[in-house]
Length: 86
Image 1 (cartoon, rainbow, N blue to C red):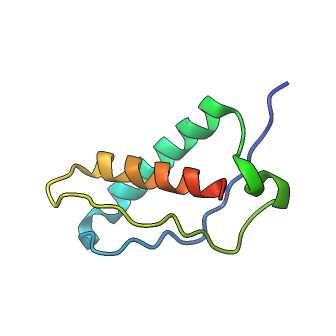
Image 2 (image 1 turned 90 degrees about the vertical axis):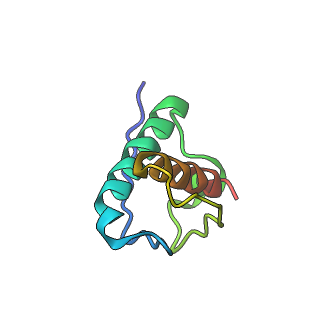
């Protein structure tokens, strides 16, 4: 039986990224987070038990200024996914 997951992200706050890259980063983020959820077929940890969080702090990480938006979006998605289990 396949579970349905509905995830709504009201706002994704990213600091120090060029404004003109925001939609490309958001698209890469969405694609990678979807891939992670499908691959694991579950939402990790406490997120699954509570049904949601008012906010999630996915921490910080270093991304080189020459990093492609696809890579940046993927790193952000992985950080968010990992933060679900905290």
